[in-house]
Amino acid sequence: MGCRLRSGLRSLLWRSHHVSRPYSSSAAEATAVLPPRERILTLQSMNPQVRAVEYAVRGPIVVKAGEIEKELQQGIKKPFSEVIKANIGDAHAMGQQPITFLRQVVALCTYPDLLDSPQFPQDAKDRARRILESCGGQSLGSYSASQGIACIREDVAQYIEQRDGGVPADPDNIFLTTGASDGIASILKILVSGEGKSRTGVMIPIPQYPLYSAAISELNAVQVNYYLDEDHCWALDVGELRRALYDAKQYSNPKVLCIINPGNPTGQVQSRRCIEEVIHFAWKEGLFLLADEVYQDNVYSPDCQFHSFKKVLYEMGPEYSSNVELASFHSTSKGYMGECGYRGGYMEVLNLHPDIKAQLVKMLSVRLCPPVSGQAAMDVVVNPPQPDEESYPQFIQEKEAVLSNLAHKAKLTEELFNQVPGIQCNPLQGAMYAFPQIFIPLKAVKEAELLQMAPDMFYCMRLLEETGICVVPGSGFGQRDGTYHFRMTILPPVEKLTLLLQSVKDFHVRFLDEFS
Image (cartoon, rainbow, N blue to C red):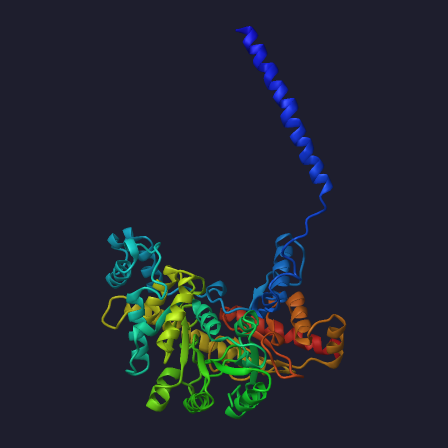
């Protein structure tokens, strides 16, 4: 027994010496001989279209704001106690409370055991049951159809019909999306084609929401700028559309016209007459219309009213309604809901060729489906409590409180900015932002050039470093040469917004004194 054990140990030691050690040594020698392996993915080798993408709303100034927040947490002294992120339209992050009914329905969908709880109203339970019955396994955790849950698309279609005074809407033309951004990017992806001078041109307003320029860069399409008229409350002028279109035909194939109504970042609300002129222009010039209407509930000026492009298109008659291709977009993120994190949205397409619609469905199927919880949230937006239901009084009170508060803050912001020498702010007719023009002295412009910064970026960085207020420079949205702006959300509570505006005023006066 002992001999066999000693023999086994000797055999194991032999194998260890003659097999393991030489292998280890060879591997070490091979590693030492091989040159350092170059990285496959570098800034030079990566997709150049992705490298070209810029998104100012979460750009360098927001990175700097994050660094300052960390310094405050570490106890580093600043002339302010907090960073106020007025750079993005994130309502709940700014203190807006959720709409109770929406959260009730989504909670019931997420945890169906609550359907037996007496704490939830019957109308919320009815909606949750209907949604769950359309889900695989009656679970919000299952995939939906790529186009979205059928009953929710039906509710979207019914909502559009009611909104537009009876203009018909087909659920088959509704695509539920991951926020409006997903729908916009998807329809642009299917529209862009060609090379050289035949490459698709996409007409976008300047100032614009940077999603558009980012998507255009990523798709390697051609950005075609048309300028809104700041002197006339950021109005859209068809003569300017014509100029931009004919100029762009020299180097591209413009075939897409993007409209943001109400405007972001400019807050203008387009008149019905303006919309008719735009539709006629698109019909005459053969342009595919994209109508970004996510702020349709955010209209504050008593002289303004939201008109959907679809409604106006139909009321212009069959010559237009049967021919003009239109995609319009809505979202849970804005309006009175402010549910940005659910990433709920929809897209309605009109006059899309059946073969193209099939290609769109195919493309969307690659991402399987939009978040099902976001689809449920979108359903509550388009199917809210009705006057004869028990949740209606609370729902309408919460909705009107949010919108009246936003209207008050829009007026407050406009009035206080216009009291500051060197700041000029157009009326905030809608949406949830101010986009004031700021005077930047020549000395400050030259200082910015030395730092290789756009002048309004320099201004906004100084504002952040001295006051803790984070806003986005106008250069990130586009602006006419020689003008400077910044975009600021009006979402903070009234008390904080008032202090914020006073801080901007004090900073601007100091800035002018320093650089004049």
